[in-house]
Length: 269
Image 1 (tube, rainbow, N blue to C red):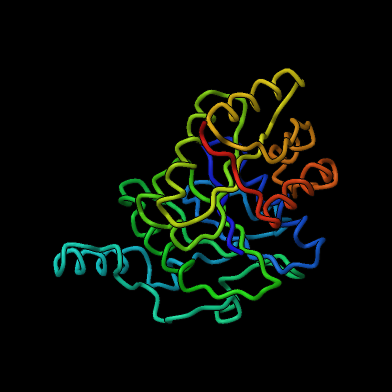
Image 2: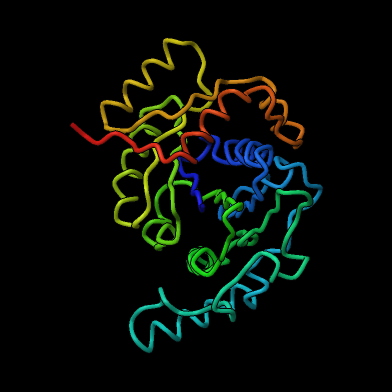
């Protein structure tokens, strides 16, 4: 199963990905985390790794090489979306050179690439590479792929989500976050994936939780689980250390259950 975790910037997508990775590992699943966020650099330490993997963009020849491939395809047929940038037709994690995969045990991390320089150009090559890698990636029945997606919905426009099985929205207590979750739900159907619903994150008082849940339900979005605001996660963010799943284990178990059992999000009334 390939699960894409989406939401607005700062909603806690990476934290949710790290928590789910630990929970799926606890259940005996082999977990591959795919970092598709070209700006957030902290996912590797949230997973307890001491360094990030080399970006897959380097395996594809580098961003400039990919840009040349896309420009050639655009000139030839007016469409760069299907331009191949990876040599293999099918991929498994074991096919990747060791520099491009980090982790031991049942949690491994790969990274598409990051923006490093001013005037480097747009992130389109990252989007094309993300889509192609996820499309060609083959997984076994005991494997789960968790995609930490870039903020917003541009990835839908690039077609990254067309190779995803399930989309999960992460929603923090704000109208902007709720509205974006609604947009994510609508775009998911066009990508051919299943919209599972939303997890409420960084939620404080019960009244806030109830109000946020009601706002989602009014938009036909099923709240799957609530991850409360925890000072431990603030400390983790300040220290750059591993996310500790035990402090919200019951909530994350509930979320994982909903994802694995195919809970269907509510539809608009």
